[in-house]
Amino acid sequence: MLSNEASLWAPPHPGRRRTRDHDFRIHHGRGLEGTLLWAEGTYEPNTCSLRGTYPLKWETYSEQSGAGGEFRYLAVFVGSSAGGADDATGT
Image (cartoon, rainbow, N blue to C red):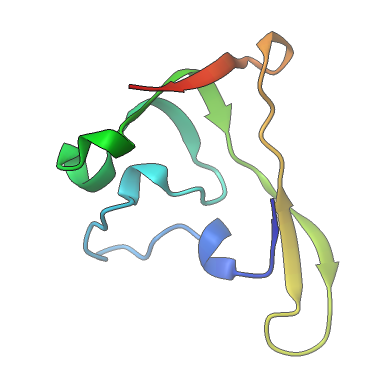
């Protein structure tokens, strides 16, 4: 994924209220694993169960002048060589 939206890679501010997509946040330094629940499980069709652990590390792609000029990318490796699962399945 490539983006210039800093809220994707920045962790939520301390004290921020929990959002419906909390389990699905993809900020830098997070690891996705286990069962991800939408709105703490109140909407079951969006529940996703992952096999393995997926570390998230955003890297600088380019920097342009002006607001929104910082671009970063996130590559999530899937497979036994990266320690992740062979696939992710929804339940």
